[in-house]
Image (cartoon, rainbow, N blue to C red; front, side, top):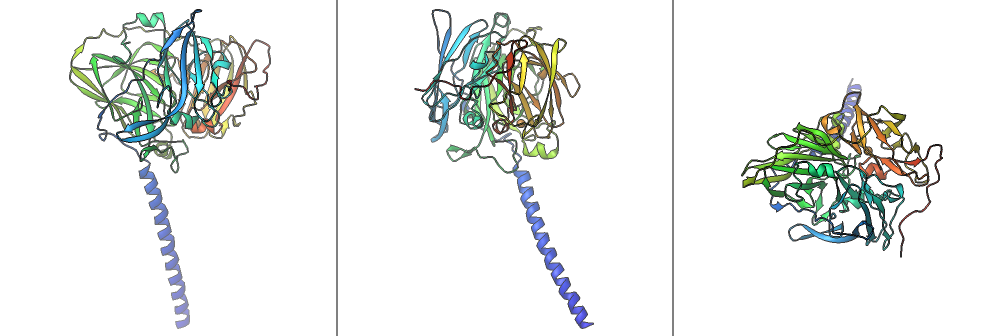
Length: 511
Ligand SMILES: [Cu+2]
């Protein structure tokens, strides 16, 4: 009895000890998880002092050569910038310490950009949203070595739009963009010039380049945090390289050209007082008519042009709100779906210049409607690769015929947030999960958000020119995913022509 009881007692003590150990471990793991879970929630609403005047990237100087070509100069260089007073942050920029000048050209114009690489590593400059020959595209096959130059030229042949430029070196795009290499490229055309839209750059027509950042003292902290398989997510935002930005405006109607130049973060923009605004343009140009909205969601690489009405003397804040289309609670939390940011304060002057009312009709987007598609293709998105294959610089994945339209179906297959960007073309989003897309996806697009559980159908036309040896890219524009291989290559060929071989080493000239 005693022995038995003593045995039971010992067993009991062991079990209790084990129970306590397991309990403590579980509590530690649970506590650690709770810490990760709550720590992953970022909210800067009400915490931004809005003490810095918003910087406006300068318009790039250009000159026109005898044959009418407009020539720009861009130099990639390392520098330092005081984002925070008295603290010098190491940065990269075009022609300056951070970001780059705004390039501007008109439809029909011949342009040339003389690029020089003043960095100590190779990079490229890609013209995001631009229709141009593949060898001018600035993708991973057009590397510019340190000290080297590259001078792509093309003729602008697409509608007025808010495009942008950024590096595209395979495997290092996240790092190069994050350090500061990005800028806007605005296109104009005669139709758009005649519309009574706010178009005085830096006055009533403001570039709004939004990036999320994290600082470790004076320097950028580009580290990925635990569970963030979406890539880098910062704990605050800046606009045009300005932290805590405000902008005084003197017109009743103000046009904001929103660009999500963040590497992984998706924003859902609106205003702090929930005022409605007019969406007038998407990635590839103006919408058929303005759409009244109170939110517009932009994943990395996407743009939206909005017009907001101001009353004399008032203030409002451009804010990014929590989003409900990220998939499950896990993705929502760890991919930043429920984060909030105060992005930019607009301060209206005591008296405002009157603005003409927005026109009822803007411009018909020049994208096919899917009825004349010559063929369809399918793209399954996984972080590990598109259609089960990680990017291979030497492999052409798709061959399209010049002059034809196609329908591409893109499906998220792993539940993680992704988006889809196609070089050279603008597309029409025909369907999102079988339904007509919302207004922000009804214009010309080159990048579309494809969160978990989503399938989109896109129609695009490939105008060429044909170049069987030089591919264009399609990829996820969450740059950590792109760098990791979520990218594929297509060439445009003449009817009946076969794909060639991408040059093993194509690029700019070093000297
Ligand atoms: Cu992705």
